[in-house]
Image (cartoon, rainbow, N blue to C red; front, side, top):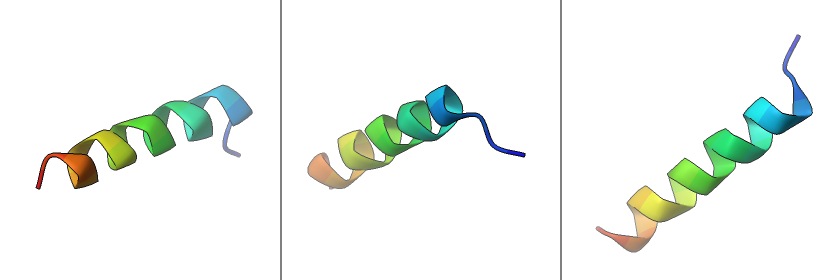
Length: 21
């Protein structure tokens, strides 16, 4: 079961990586 904070953290990392491509 995913934690909401974990999901938000993962989303922030995903966006950060996409912005740097």
